[in-house]
Amino acid sequence: MAEEQNGAAANAEAPNVQFAMQRIYLKDLSFETPMGTEVFKKEWKPQVNQELNTKTAKIDEDLYEVALTLTITVKLEEDTAFLVEVKQAGLFTVKGLEGQQLAQVLNTACPQILFPYAREVVDNAVTKGSFPALMLPPINFDALFASALAQAQQQAEGAQAEEKAEA
Image (tube, rainbow, N blue to C red; front, side, top):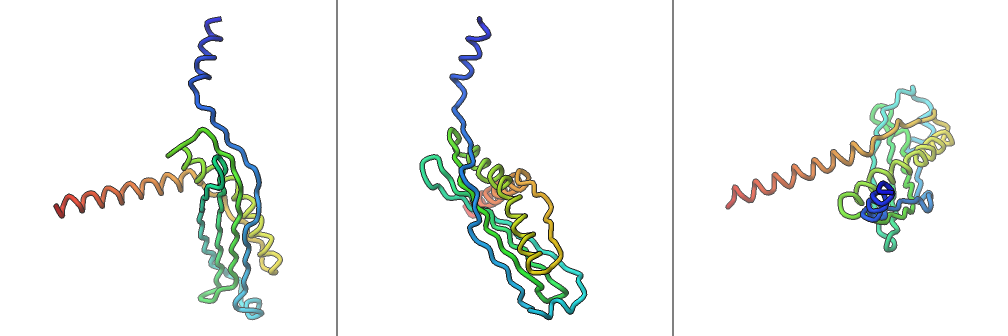
């Protein structure tokens, strides 16, 4: 009986946190082959460059849109063989989180859900452009978020140090 009361008290104190995916959709897709047919005459020794970006927008009280943008540039020597940009987005309901916790969910959990969809779109676009399949490796969004926080903290500390030095 005492255990049930303690459990009920713990549940009453815990915030009502909810996280749910509402929809995943392709927001934008671009595929370019600037070299045209010349690309198929060259030896295939690609240099792959990947850029990643996330953008979050509050849509409603507890509804957020998270857009993951992947830009892949493949070069043969100095020439761009192809460029593919995918903006994969999702609508997510997040309740009961604020500040740092909310930022972490929106910048780690949501992109982690979106990434496999974006990776599939990239692979499909590349193979439809008649290039070899391009399977992108998984990304550790938790590590990227922690790194971004550490960098922001270092910049803030550097700015404070400059202010003290000027004073």
